[in-house]
Length: 221
Image (cartoon, rainbow, N blue to C red; front, top):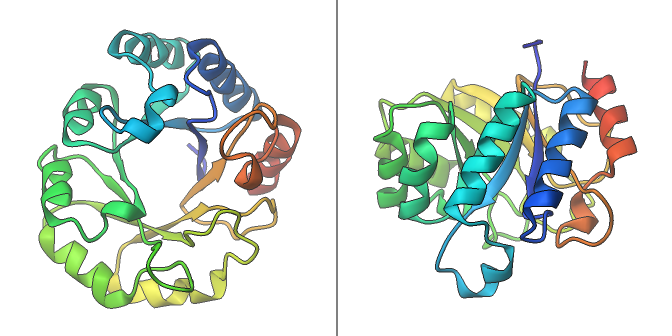
């Protein structure tokens, strides 16, 4: 690992296709990312067409292992937390769950590092307040937390990295979960950037194509 741990956020840009998910792994690996991350959920009706089965997730995990890239996935249900735990070296908590004490405690019970996004869909600037972050950390005082600066806007025209200094008060390792399409973002110990194969995907407006993503990784390195 270099001084920047790069996560290719594939999300649900696979459109529910294991074949496309594996292609995203290929692209992330070829670009030189350290990890490729997906989104895991069940029983969320509006996202049902993007689901993979448990068998497909296991297949995808072993495919990542065979390609020497770390498999990660963001859980969106309690069931997903437990299912993913044996396969991931760390857990990602999306901004949506920053104020959900029970969800945070369940993730922390796995005793693995937590990538905690600090965006918000309820504030105009797309970012959680320091009070909300402070409360979240109070729910999981013993957890190893990496705070991921995030602006929850889709697309995000201004990632406002000038506000990262606000996170210094928490004395945690900092990272960036970026929703812009710019490759010119600051370097940080952990950086997460969305990746797409093409424009036939839900997150096309916040994702880099394979050529752009490879250029981004080169710049980070």
